[in-house]
Image (cartoon, rainbow, N blue to C red):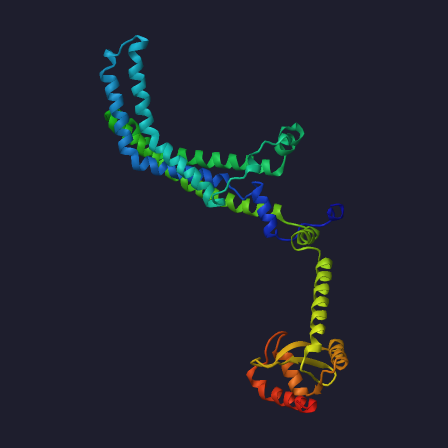
Amino acid sequence: MPEDSGQERTEQATSKKRQDAREKGQVALSREVASTMVMLGALMAMALSGTWSVGRLSGLMTHFWANSAKLPISSSGIQPFLIRLAIEFFLTVFPVFLGVLIAAIAGNVIQIGFFISPEALSPKFSKLNPFSGIKRLVSLRSLSEVLKSILKILCLGGVGWLVLRSEADHFPMLIQFDLIDVAQYLWRMVLKIGFFSFLVMAVLAAMDYAFQRWQYEKDLRMTKQEVKEEMKQTEGDPKIKSRIRSIQMELARKRMMAAVPGAAVVITNPTHLAVALQYQSGMTAPRVIAKGAGFVAQRIREIASQHNVPVIENKPVAQALYKAVDLGQSIPVELYKAVAEILAFVYRMKGT
């Protein structure tokens, strides 16, 4: 809105604003957390299936070299061998693929839960606008992503270099080992590099997640006018609500006044308060059918006088009834005696 253009976004986002943003796919999601979870899943899968995978690969390579002279050179003859090679390779790397898949799903679920936004998945032609693309490329967010990627490359590269440097003395000795021992050594070194890389990634992911949460909360902030407009949409205009309440109170007052002619007695304070009681044979206790203060009390007295309803002044009883008994409720036990005396006086006045 034009009048909001000069306002600062100082207000925390409302629950409705958060829900609307979530439905649009706007969530606090860190790619680094997902990447770290993927690395953790791959490491766990490699560690658990390492011996089995290395043994399977070693067996495949041994079989290949042992039978290399027997391999047919025709395309039809080598096809079964290639099929077996593909199956063996798939079975070898399948545990890692499975671990990566589970970790990738978990990396998103732990951040935003199980959630799919149809609106975020729908195509938006505005993204094809080259000018908008250029703006995104030169934005502060894009710059931060580039710097973050450079930092990640430097850190992971440094970890790999340090691990390789610490193992450099063992490399010349590898020529004395057989193929299986070399494969197992390289497998352990890969796990070592992966473990230290994971530690670095975990630190970077924690920093990135904190930044994404801060950026998300900042982007969701609202102006005071936006909060007011949202309250109008969800709860209604305060002026209209006030008008509805006044109409409802007026209707309730009219119904209350219409019940006064059926009262057995009206007890007053003498002028400030008025309480109309109804009592008929068969009722367990008198019931308050009208009460009020000030102008309402005056109106109750006027209607009672017009319909020959006795008006009795009793300040303590009037105050007790006004404070303790709501409309339509029977009087409490502690007021039975005082009200009974008033009703007995009224009945004597009427000669009944």
